[in-house]
Image 1 (tube, rainbow, N blue to C red):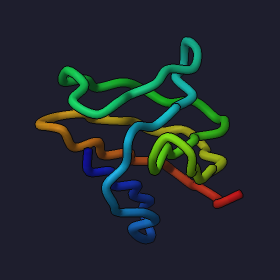
Image 2: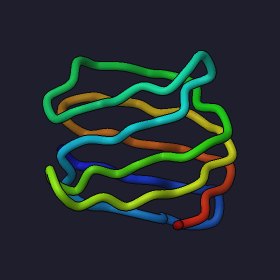
Image 3: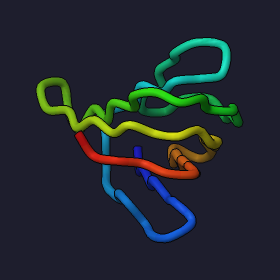
Length: 83
């Protein structure tokens, strides 16, 4: 699936991924390839990008939203830092 991570200042990440793990406001959840459409609020915490089954990248986010539609995930966050 295609993933875009956007902050108000810039595009932080764009690329094809296997899935993402996100800190929701009610707990962590995971979105994998071909996920059903979804819009969810995000809290502060760690976001893990699953590039494939063995490679990951992590970010600390300050909260925001995620939209999943047509095998594309768009993560809109107030602030993010790569770990």
